Image (cartoon, one colour):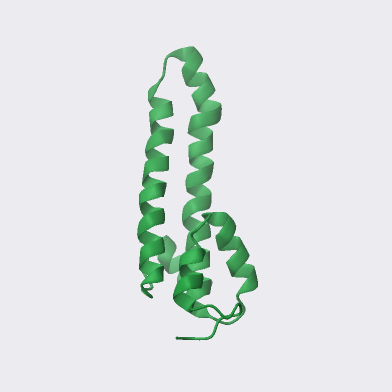
Length: 116
Protein backbone atom coordinates (compact mmCIF):
# COMPACT_ATOMS: atom_id res chain seq x y z
CA UNK A 1 0.00 0.00 0.00
CA UNK A 2 1.38 3.41 -0.96
CA UNK A 3 2.09 6.13 1.59
CA UNK A 4 -0.46 8.90 2.15
CA UNK A 5 -0.22 12.25 3.90
CA UNK A 6 -2.61 11.17 6.67
CA UNK A 7 -0.98 7.75 7.17
CA UNK A 8 -4.18 5.95 6.24
CA UNK A 9 -4.40 3.30 3.57
CA UNK A 10 -4.75 4.88 0.15
CA UNK A 11 -7.95 2.89 -0.39
CA UNK A 12 -9.43 4.37 2.81
CA UNK A 13 -8.46 7.91 1.82
CA UNK A 14 -9.71 7.31 -1.72
CA UNK A 15 -13.11 6.23 -0.42
CA UNK A 16 -13.22 9.14 2.03
CA UNK A 17 -12.79 11.53 -0.90
CA UNK A 18 -16.40 10.71 -1.78
CA UNK A 19 -17.85 10.58 1.74
CA UNK A 20 -19.40 14.06 1.70
CA UNK A 21 -19.20 14.52 -2.06
CA UNK A 22 -17.30 17.49 -3.42
CA UNK A 23 -16.60 18.85 0.08
CA UNK A 24 -14.39 15.93 1.10
CA UNK A 25 -13.00 15.91 -2.43
CA UNK A 26 -11.70 19.44 -1.88
CA UNK A 27 -10.37 18.61 1.59
CA UNK A 28 -8.41 15.57 0.40
CA UNK A 29 -7.20 17.34 -2.75
CA UNK A 30 -5.67 20.03 -0.53
CA UNK A 31 -4.41 17.75 2.28
CA UNK A 32 -2.93 14.96 0.15
CA UNK A 33 0.48 15.98 -1.14
CA UNK A 34 1.96 13.02 -3.02
CA UNK A 35 -0.41 10.11 -3.48
CA UNK A 36 -1.74 10.12 -7.05
CA UNK A 37 -4.48 7.58 -6.28
CA UNK A 38 -5.99 9.77 -3.56
CA UNK A 39 -5.56 12.98 -5.59
CA UNK A 40 -7.33 11.32 -8.53
CA UNK A 41 -10.33 10.29 -6.43
CA UNK A 42 -10.45 13.70 -4.75
CA UNK A 43 -10.51 15.49 -8.10
CA UNK A 44 -13.05 13.08 -9.58
CA UNK A 45 -15.27 13.64 -6.55
CA UNK A 46 -15.14 17.40 -7.08
CA UNK A 47 -15.77 17.15 -10.83
CA UNK A 48 -18.73 14.78 -10.42
CA UNK A 49 -20.55 15.93 -7.32
CA UNK A 50 -20.16 19.72 -7.46
CA UNK A 51 -21.96 20.06 -10.82
CA UNK A 52 -24.60 17.49 -9.83
CA UNK A 53 -25.26 19.36 -6.58
CA UNK A 54 -25.57 22.69 -8.39
CA UNK A 55 -27.93 21.22 -10.99
CA UNK A 56 -30.10 19.57 -8.32
CA UNK A 57 -30.30 22.85 -6.40
CA UNK A 58 -31.21 24.77 -9.56
CA UNK A 59 -33.97 22.38 -10.58
CA UNK A 60 -35.20 21.79 -7.04
CA UNK A 61 -34.84 25.36 -5.82
CA UNK A 62 -35.19 28.12 -8.38
CA UNK A 63 -36.96 26.13 -11.07
CA UNK A 64 -38.74 24.14 -8.39
CA UNK A 65 -40.39 27.28 -7.04
CA UNK A 66 -41.30 28.26 -10.60
CA UNK A 67 -42.65 24.77 -11.21
CA UNK A 68 -44.87 25.03 -8.15
CA UNK A 69 -46.56 28.19 -9.44
CA UNK A 70 -46.67 27.26 -13.11
CA UNK A 71 -47.67 23.61 -12.88
CA UNK A 72 -44.42 22.32 -14.43
CA UNK A 73 -43.95 19.58 -11.86
CA UNK A 74 -41.43 17.68 -14.01
CA UNK A 75 -38.77 20.20 -12.98
CA UNK A 76 -38.89 18.83 -9.43
CA UNK A 77 -38.66 15.34 -10.87
CA UNK A 78 -35.48 16.33 -12.68
CA UNK A 79 -33.97 17.39 -9.36
CA UNK A 80 -35.01 14.09 -7.79
CA UNK A 81 -33.53 12.16 -10.69
CA UNK A 82 -30.25 14.05 -10.35
CA UNK A 83 -30.10 13.17 -6.63
CA UNK A 84 -30.80 9.50 -7.38
CA UNK A 85 -28.00 9.45 -9.97
CA UNK A 86 -25.69 11.16 -7.46
CA UNK A 87 -26.43 8.58 -4.76
CA UNK A 88 -25.80 5.67 -7.16
CA UNK A 89 -22.51 7.22 -8.32
CA UNK A 90 -21.56 7.96 -4.72
CA UNK A 91 -21.99 4.32 -3.70
CA UNK A 92 -20.17 2.93 -6.75
CA UNK A 93 -17.25 5.37 -6.52
CA UNK A 94 -16.76 4.86 -2.78
CA UNK A 95 -16.81 1.09 -3.20
CA UNK A 96 -14.39 1.11 -6.14
CA UNK A 97 -11.97 3.42 -4.32
CA UNK A 98 -12.15 1.27 -1.17
CA UNK A 99 -11.36 -1.78 -3.31
CA UNK A 100 -8.24 0.05 -4.50
CA UNK A 101 -9.52 0.50 -8.04
CA UNK A 102 -8.86 3.64 -10.03
CA UNK A 103 -12.35 3.65 -11.53
CA UNK A 104 -12.57 6.40 -14.13
CA UNK A 105 -15.90 7.85 -15.16
CA UNK A 106 -16.18 9.02 -18.76
CA UNK A 107 -14.86 12.53 -19.42
CA UNK A 108 -14.40 13.59 -15.76
CA UNK A 109 -12.13 10.62 -15.06
CA UNK A 110 -9.71 11.77 -17.75
CA UNK A 111 -9.78 15.35 -16.46
CA UNK A 112 -9.24 14.12 -12.89
CA UNK A 113 -6.32 11.99 -14.02
CA UNK A 114 -4.65 14.95 -15.72
CA UNK A 115 -5.08 17.13 -12.62
CA UNK A 116 -4.00 14.63 -9.97
